[in-house]
Length: 488
Ligand SMILES: *Cc1c(COP(=O)(O)O)cnc(C)c1O
Image (cartoon, rainbow, N blue to C red):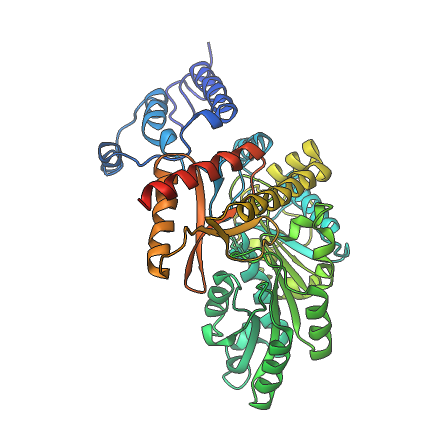
């Protein structure tokens, strides 16, 4: 029998495809069980020292069987997950993931194309997904966009385009001219996400180029203070170039007055960027859509599909209204990336010309599959339900004398604390921190936290398509039990 390549030819493929097929079938069964039974497992548990020690070994130089590697994964990795797949995880701001997302990521790795560019299905799927995102956000078809790792990269990408356009000289060639770029100022509320400051630092403008404006009692940007700061800065010879509005702040879910910011940016000739990592996709929810009116007037939007659209990490998206400005900020084509008129290297406007990454994974596939399977209306219902659940939780808190709401409820974010009365701020902060930790350690729920005006808050951010009303009932019952217990 002739076999080519010869059977002793070494590759990274399995020696025996049938054994590998059986193992992968087992993994699929286990994975479906893992998600179907997510409610029955502990939401979070501390990794024991002996398990932790298993991650301190030297690099493997010799092979192990795939079966034994999988066994190790099952005993040392799977039980110690972060917990955000669970219905009672409401910390930071994260999605749950979905099976359709898993299938998309699976096939993305099987096909393993490089979606940096070229002429192949991965490029078309991403274009389709970007066009859907434009449609959802009310952006024109002529706008451009890119799938990126997450909100941080989406904001970074948009602010890069904003800087380059508003610098008014070839900043890519010349770098930071002190008399121009050195004076460029961006504005955002004090509640703006830290990644925007990081972006300005990396863009060479410095953290000082971000002027943070005070907020109203509802945590939205104070428009009068913003307008005054812009005038004051102009009078000083500084060069305002950009306003960053937030649709869904990370602390309290506040949505800045987007139409007013759009008007101001028009009048002042400033780039209007919206950090919509939390709230942009809430335009899909009938009970939130109106509060996001005006977002379509932005020059750029940062979106985070691994948050409220529940795509598996990582899935961010940036939209830029002026497609040529977007391309001008990132396109650079050396001879080894020159395009052909036919074949796999053909096609214009490669994704790598719109962002920092050259090699890019097939992120679009999970989004394409999930949106086709569920449709935007269903995603909108999931978002709407989370908003209703935040209001429900708010009502329970209002009815309970020992609980105190610490901020207006924005979208799906509830900040509150246990306050039995008669305690000073330091004691209250310590008590609430302890309650939060015990809820986690007893695997009851994983609430989030933040600090507002020096008060430690238990912060519930409900981007969770698995949470039911009863989950919030149980959560508050247990919280009150712990509060009483810890307060003696
Ligand atoms: C989460 C978040 C970000 C950062 O997004 P990542 O996906 O974590 O990089 C930016 N802005 C806001 C408002 C966020 O909530």
